[in-house]
Image 1 (spheres, rainbow, N blue to C red):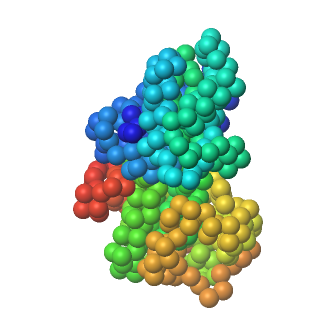
Image 2: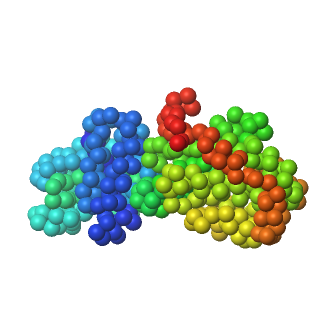
Image 3: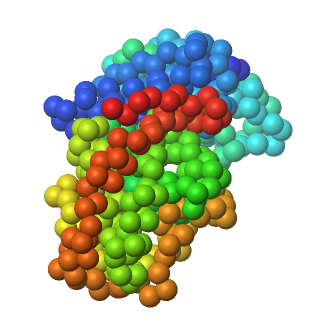
Length: 402
């Protein structure tokens, strides 16, 4: 039997009151954008459910995409039928019969939000269980661990039959929490931070610092591939690639070696903040984990944060590396991050970076040289790419940033 739709159930956004329609609208937009490669589908949204009308599109491919969209608690490929017992029984038999293999067990799980329906949940379970048992020889009941669980959801507008409930990504839909800039390196941590931020409803744009000839085109491709993974959440991702060579060389020449890492992070933050302002973002996201490296001690964060009043969100701040790696595996970014191509954060790491840098010291070192023209040049020469998950590098859409 062919499914004709996918029923999407909301997660946390179900707790919203007057703003609920806003969240539902954001989720609908995310679903439509993520499924834009399927021209026949239609997305309908109601107060407490969303429906993807398949119109013949590949349900298996669509299931894989929906699993990654934040704001979805669970979803089920389903068949819609009228609230008529005979038509319901006919559809249930056809659906279970198309899945049943000899020796398998089943159960019926009824949910009835339409309290005017002629049977209660126990009555639905008994009627349809008996109907299936009498028409499918060899089928047996197992209420604890059935091979097939027929879900019958009775709603006012129709009845939905399904045999599969798939866990979604949870969280809030993209864009429902505002826009933020993700400082995206080629490492393991920052893409995970991006996913965790998007799960809380943030729309993110990524900022990557590129230092040719010290960093290669392979390093740039690596970051684009990470952005493609992030783009799977809602169909696209904006990536800003900042030319950072001149700024980084000036830091090496003007700042004592043990403070270069601190200054580098400060200037990255300043540049990201300027791009954030032009793109109307409200926060900056980093992949920092407290104490993991020299620039991520509390003293370092205190000194680096001085250059901006913009909120800095650190989703991974209390996680250890093992936890972060596990999440990177789940989001399928670990293999990309482990490619042996260095970014600008790793090529000039000093032998003994300062773990407890002082603000007054780094201010003094940076005051000996006018970095502002280099910062403005880096911002103005930033390349912006709109990344789509199903396209190769050559198919990305290039736009002017300003």
